[in-house]
Length: 70
Image (cartoon, rainbow, N blue to C red; front, side):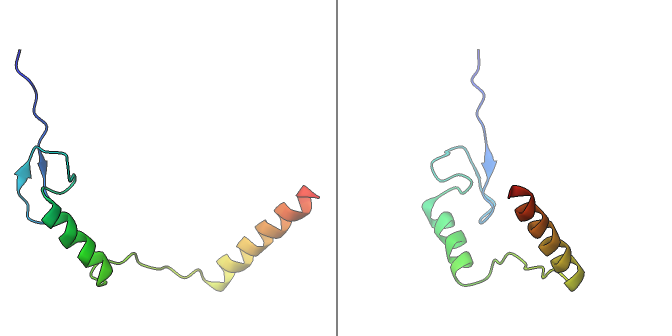
């Protein structure tokens, strides 16, 4: 019976690879390139500021939860 070989595509260089040592990257070099992009700010998680109404609603929920614990 033949063995199934799992392949992946590196998100940095797009090379297809089978070794999971540096998954999801094909090599240490590609993993380091990705890490460098996080460090230099190329990648960023967008910040969504809640508006005044959402902030007030959240504050009320927290206050109600605290008062029900007592």
